[in-house]
Image (cartoon, rainbow, N blue to C red; front, side):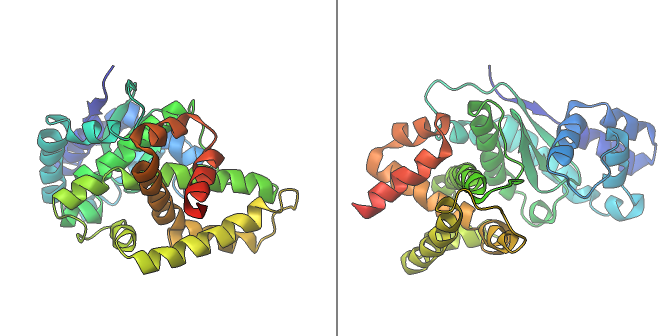
Amino acid sequence: MSLKYDFTFAENAIKYLESGNSEYLTKIANSEAAQHILGHARRFNYNVPKGSALELVTHLLTPLDKHKEKLPQVVRNLDYAKNHIANTGIAAATALQYLPTGFAFTGSIFFTFGYDIGVAFGHNCSLNLAHNIFAANMHELKYYAIHEIHHAGFITLKDGYMPSQAAPTRGEMANIISYLTHLEGTGTYAPLAIRQQENALNADGDYMGDYAALQDTSHMRSLVKEYFEIYNYFHDNPSEPLVEADGDKINILSDEKRLWYIVGAHMARTIDAQLGRDKLTSLIREPSENFVNIYLTLRNN
């Protein structure tokens, strides 16, 4: 079975913004795409209405006049997604190169309006065609699609498991850090080669600092050192309860310095280069701590 491309949300969002007819909000709310982002919002407690799909969709498309200003870019981006992502299959084909041989997608990529940049949940993923990054550069849609499609494959291979980042002990947090380093690291690594080929390492976007760091050997060593100082703090004290200050360390890994994206991609690249693609992809089916430990073995040899 191959990945499905679902444009229902974006197409009806465009119709709503053009007409102001609230019937389109109901159509969007009844779509699989709306259920996908509602499930994601509930699972990770996003700061959006979570009572129903209609409440969430109405929130994402309000105020009408403000979002209407984005129409030209969204229409353009929808056309790009259809012609350069769905019709070519390039993003899915690239993501498959970083998933185990024989893996087949069972879900969809939904093209939406207003929710995050892109998210994965279960065996599905989505991209927000209205995001400012894509308004500035529609070609970024292809690279972000690779990232999110790979996530969908990764999560499927993990039997749908995704941690919520809620953990009572440092040991359990270390397992969550391993998982997210593995998930985000391999997802960041998957578009690296095609970005290099297409001279797209210096475009604007959330991940551009990640790719710049990956090209800077000295800076990379510093980031790896910082990552493992934090990782070992949790891993080496497994029975200790989490305290409020531990959240600051997690923030360094995620938003502040994006270490589980950057260092995770460095780990994936190292394993790929030294042990081969089959080894890298086979690790997805294993506990993510193995991904970290194999990198450590390679680094220390």
